[in-house]
Figure (tube, rainbow, N blue to C red):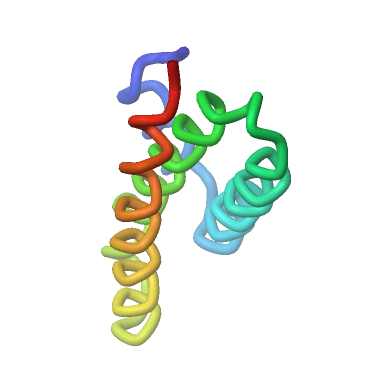
Length: 88
């Protein structure tokens, strides 16, 4: 996996709508991959990536979007814990 600093630098180059699209795509991949128990490890990685995308996106969003995004980030983190412990 690429260093987090490289991922952040690439993510932050895009305008806000593109970044939101990247976050939405990542969340859709989490849903899709989580349907197969063999994909638990990639699902955990995707959840961590989504949490970072939210962290990087939120400061530039409007206040209501920040609240929504941070709640999504919290829920993603809560869901990631049991999945991460199930990964062999």
